[in-house]
Image (cartoon, rainbow, N blue to C red):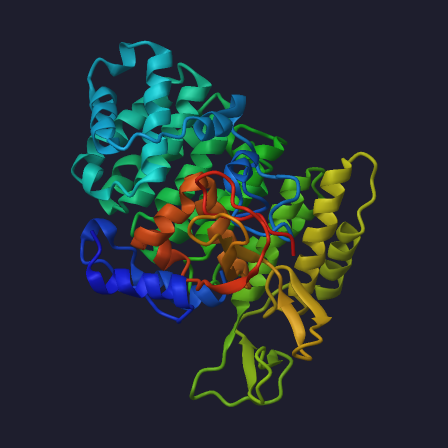
Length: 485
């Protein structure tokens, strides 16, 4: 349970738009290395879109952002849809969770009926998504993690293995733990490299990123894990015996972008990463192209940080002067901390070509996603302090550029009639990478965790403010509204 102060701060941010910072939880299990999560990485910091199933469950992002065709690798056999369909309304959910956990931990579980095992995993995932179960599972993390890993290693069934990996990811988000991380990481790496099932590899990469993010690990270990992902990307999948398979490469790119948001100083690895992502701009896969491009935009964003108090804004090609986005007279200065592309002109030319991609070998929806994404990416490469969906259109009311149009919208309580939505703006690439990865793992339980799980609020400390009347009705029990920009 959170202390009263942290809870009141979070409610204030959600309801009134006051800028607040949540206090780090005292519990070791809930520690997120707050200094890292809320550090300079936040001024710099997965990938294209949330899954189709998650969109069906209720998108929390306006259609100007994530509503285009999903370019992320999807789970096999409609697993996301299966989970979304199994939404539990059982008020006695804690008793249900106890029963589910007992069945998972039972030593005879792996010899039980396959369908029964899959149903237990689906129930577990849903319960942890829809409720904050930290106190319910905190004392049995080791047993649960071991059971999930055994399911994956057995590879009896693709769906079961993918569900077990999803269960492991939502467990790490619910109870961040260095001990759990240490207990599963060797197995996760082996599953990524050695599994004979491509879909299991993809899901393992995503769980690997979530576990690394919430494993409270050192900066050096973060860089080591990024190195593994870069090996997968640079080898076009050959490193994990998946040569020229675009899905695991796209998953590794997205995982890299998400995990890279934790790194304060990227100078030691930037050159290799940027070169690798630029090479992937020759891919034939739209999902690989977009993920690589968005990682490039992230690296450009991370390279520029505000001038320190003891630094003078001297004229330099590395210095950016940015007008106050709120229309004030203050000029903000950003300095490039390390070199970026060796040939900026060539990179921009390649991004422009992708923005105007017209090959008939790519579907119309994929072309639309490429055009929209690379317009954003190119703009951020040219203007590194401008985040995704940045509009240069002049707002007639303020006389300033409209800025980011990428919104999270939260429906008012009740969701009937004209609901006044609370709105938060995602105006940095690091925010977009984190939101997509966490939304992928939590599905329609994202806002449940955002409101009560310190792990989510500290990772994505954005502020909701009262929005305009939307005239749209919320769907079902969900509090998110899909609103056109």
